[in-house]
Amino acid sequence: MKIELVNENKNVDIDNNKSLYDFLKEYKTDYKKYLGIKVNNKLRELVNADFCENDKVEFLDITDRDGHRIYVRTLSLIYIKACKDVFKNIDVEIKHSLNKGLYTELEFKQPVNNTKLESIKKRMKEIIDAQRPVNTVFLDIDEAEKIFLGQGMKDKAELLKYWTKDKIRVYELDGYYDTFYGYLAPNTGYIDKFDLRLFYPGIILNFPTKESNFELPEYIEQKKLYKVFKEAEEWGEIMDVGYVGVLNKKNSQ
Image 1 (cartoon, rainbow, N blue to C red):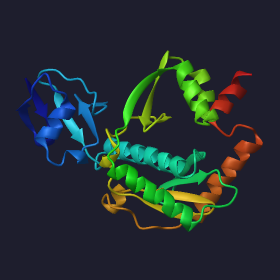
Image 2 (cartoon, rainbow, N blue to C red):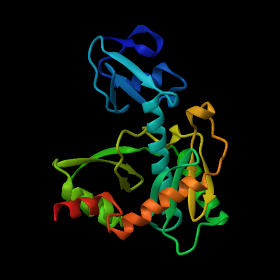
Image 3 (cartoon, rainbow, N blue to C red):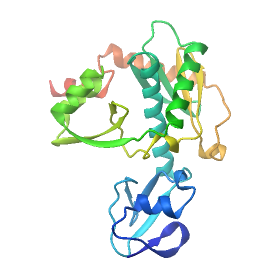
Image 4 (tube, rainbow, N blue to C red):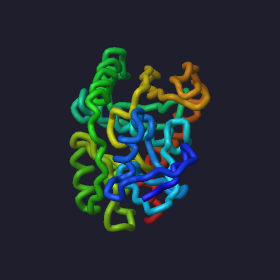
């Protein structure tokens, strides 16, 4: 059958017994630059996208807004998994955007130091080099809650009490399960650029940005912005609404 390949503005033949992901891997030698897909302008998961005759198909790389988001989500999963591998299932929080990256905190009694940071970075590179599959799994709510509690993720388990569907989509990487608001790349090998920087008391996870021509951005410290975020976070803790699950519980009382 034929599809319209938007990236190249032409029609191409595709075996209807093959997935669009398999087609991409055969069609492009640099297929790993493509993180996501749109079919008839609707965002779909790259590995599982359905298609029909004459559909318009667009493969998304990091320069696309949705492709960039997929990159950042996948990198975040790798970062969390690496932290938990190195420090025995430590709690990891991705707090907010900061310094052209994501500010994160780990549940240490002391601030993160260079030794810990380098250990995390080394493990991240190992996970990326291993090209480990990122699997999409649909779980019953009870099963997902059990898994999250087993991983020490009480916040996410609490959120499931307000989930209105029978199942929830989660992503699995080497036995670690997590949820994301959007799609991820098929495997860890799609991530090729990242950096970690100490930012008291946590770590900033840096990734390519549009402003830096999709290279790693120059580091510019933003202490004033961090202070604003920190004050908002502390106020949430004072009010006992530090995360969405608790906020939902407060509103329902």
